[in-house]
Length: 332
Image: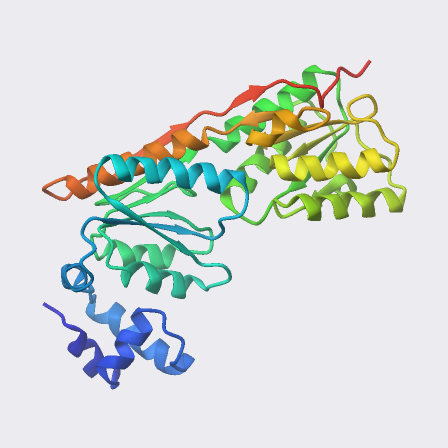
């Protein structure tokens, strides 16, 4: 069995240096880091996760690895996961990566010593997922479709949800439709893919001037919409916003400019956060089954952890649904 000492000898460095690289401790030069990772790859080194479990005494702890904890979506997701852990006698540790690199996130996961992990972090690249797979650590991804031994995915069918939103706007008579992007992740990618596919299906043009990016934040979407209004660009019949926070930012900017929603411009969101029904106008949106997402991901992870033998992974798709409220109107 390859040991950490073998990796250190192959790379010509100290064992502590290998440990720092694998744990994402930023005290090693890029050149040395490359030597260590090349040695890991060459020798197919797999960290001894059992030793980490014993050392940290975290065999009853689940790790939730997120890129953010801001907003209602993350609150609902975390609560659902925590409830399942509590019911099964597991503790939940939450790790927020912020602006960490893929390599640092990888180090954070394998050094955590948790019994298993739920990962919702678009920054974690596939090459590092492949390295994590070598550890046989039970993992459930909720931001990508990935399966393997002890690895599963639970994902919201964003393509289906985006298609539902666009088809609804088309049925209402809207033909010129804008889009507000979130951050660069798989959720936004699939929702935007649906936007483009439905426009193409109905032979409708896609106008880049009414495609904005609000990074899933209300204030940024508000600012982008203000800039659009100042430019005097012809407004669309409707906006499809990749989440509810951005939809509300869009509505606020339009209202302040004297443009009535939905009388002049319709707005549809995505997620159906708690506040969506309390906005004025109440937001028509696509309901993301966030609680179900948290429950299903925790349940699947616990299945992987408690399986006596290596368990094949699965992909579970959760379907969104349309919630009709007041922010969209038939265009005559």
